[in-house]
Image 1 (cartoon, helix red, strand yellow):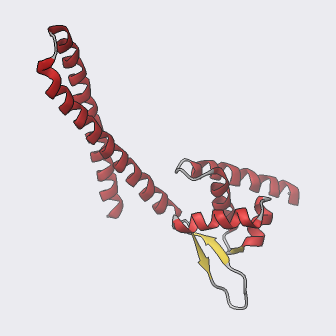
Image 2 (cartoon, rainbow, N blue to C red; image 1 turned 90 degrees about the vertical axis):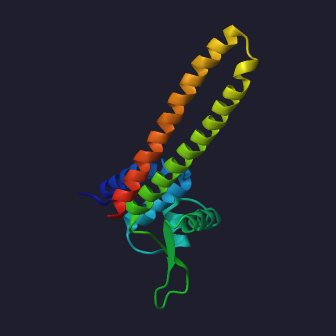
Image 3 (tube, helix red, strand yellow; image 1 turned 30 degrees about the horizontal axis):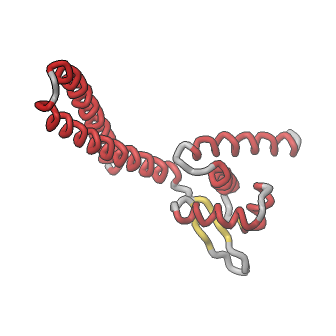
Length: 167
């Protein structure tokens, strides 16, 4: 297998893995940087990351700071090396799943709270409506109740997943 062929395959892997990372609300450039760090498997300098990405050192520096802030990468020290080195957090699956689960729980909870407020508004306004409006309000009320139940189910499922991951 030629070196170019291996490089092409490596780029395909990085591209596909970066797409997966993007699903967790990480921008494409940072997702690609993370994928490169993860695939490389050894700490890299800003210069090395810049060369691998084909981006400026300033752009890479911004991206790596974001990844460090998200706890997806960390700065490491190596004896005899004066430049900052960074590596991807190897415990990738746990980090992404925790992040994903927390986002879903938070989003479902926020949406459920908003729907409960709407439900209250429907109840408060119900008696001020005409008979036709009351019929429409009842239909909306039923739908809102279904949506609240759905969001409650989502919260429950993700809390259950979260608790089973710990064991």
